[in-house]
Each structure stands twice: as structure tokens, then as C-alpha cells.
Length: 127
Image (cartoon, rainbow, N blue to C red; front, side):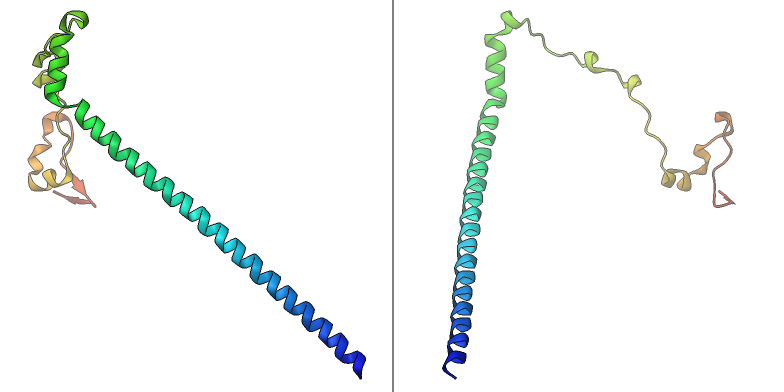
């Protein structure tokens, strides 16, 4: 009878050791993941701080007064000239806005016979 208890005791001790090992491994993995999470959060904070600094620098560098002062200082070296409105384009070069279906529904006479197109029809119903 005494041999049976020893086998049972050995099995229970082995189960307790296995449970303790599993618990230790789980705790160790959880702590490792938590440390990894903290490192990532710290990196995110650093990147956000860097973005704030870069935005402040960009704001400082693009101030109109600063740019005007640079233009005046380097006008001779860069041969800078003011932009004329005609350099960009003229009103005639702007493409006409395409017609929207709502425009046609409100005024079907926008499509004329002169353009070589028939009157607008939708779903087989003439407008």
C-alpha cells in the first residue's frame, strides 16, 4: 500500500513542479511583453516630441517676414524677380467646369443642338 502513495506523491509533485514552471514562464513572458510595450510607448512619445519640434521649426522657417528678408538679402545672387500674374496663366486658359447631372436636371437647355448632342435622357425618359 505504501508504494501506491509514493507513485501518487511523485505524480503530484511532478504536476506541482510543472504548474510552477508554467506559472513562472507565463509571468516572465508577460513581464517581457510589458517591457516591450513600455519601450514602444517611449519611442512613440519621442517621435511625437520630435514632430512637435519639427512643426515649430517649420513654422519659424516659413514666416513671411523671414522669407521676405531672405529674398532681399539674396536678390542679387539668385536674380529673383516678383511673380507676375500673367506668368501663371490667364483666365482663358482655365478649363470650363464640367457639367454635373444636377445642372442638367435643373436646366436641360444647357445641352444644345449646336453641340451635336441630343437632349439628355436618363432611364429612357426624355428630359
